[in-house]
Length: 479
Image (cartoon, rainbow, N blue to C red):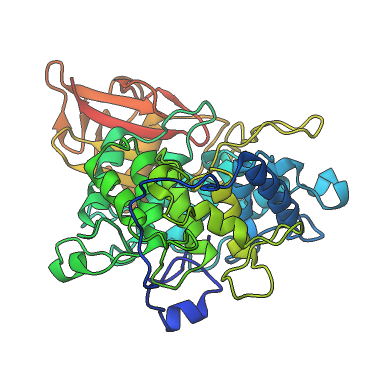
């Protein structure tokens, strides 16, 4: 799984798929009345598939320990490793722990040259999801790198709820996946509910009439809403809803599940994708089901012929080498398809909390512990005026110590918030004391400005409140 840098289907190495879409196969899903005994892949078969799949993904590691370069590459293996129970810090070439995949990836993310001279929001979303799976706190990659703040910088002020150009809707889908899925080290939600609600609103508004999604924006477009959905983005978008806290009994989630169910081919268990039957689309569809707590081997996903989407993946895995084909007719494994397939077989969504490592001395998480004085950095900030006017921005500033204050962050946001306008004025404008007026809205009785950090309970906002590296800051006016 890789995210596009342009408004195209969501994976690299798919040139043929982008240039000539293949019509879905004639077979559809069938209601199942009596299941044959061989209906699903067994736990033993799945365990073997995971073991072999992990072994194959380890062969993708370069001699220097890397999986990723400056562009799209194999770092999505980290989410597959985590889902399969392998800590990324334990993946090292020739057993050389100094070159373990997590350390090498963290070093890459920390460089000023990453991701490129002209980044797009999906670069940072990809980084956040895979850093989290690797056991790197996405907001505290280094003294200068905060991936959550990087994502905040792409908020669309004129179209609240979207991240990046709204026409490339997958930027918003993966913002929801990253901001909702990449939780705090303690497992809590780090972003405020108001932001989550805004993203969920756009996910719902772009659901097609058939219950699925594509990478394109269709909100308010009857023709677009009536167009056919694809498997890939349906899996991603339904997962985005579920990691945002939407229950799997929700009407929109159920409609997405039913869309996928209606695309299962009887004889193979494959999802009939817009791009033809392939393991990557199957992997994305299953990942969506996994993220929402639906069993892809349940009765409703088992065909009359006794096949499930998981059966299709296992049928296209090389044994015992572990790689997966992209299409059944292929004669060699695909790295990207193997990543997508293993994540799905292992029960993962689009990211997974890191497993406990087995390497002696390795910790489950790594994170920058404090600011470095004089090193420019960013913080993620939201301002909710209590009247539905949510502002989101990335605040650039240069700290003078290992911590800073809320007042200093708000002051910096006035001139260095992106997008601009997140903070226009704050009272008091210096010193200490409670924030009494923000953006022209003053405290009134019990309705006052309150602050939350990394999802903590909202409490009175004071200029002197200590803010640490990577803190995700939310301000809200109300009782």
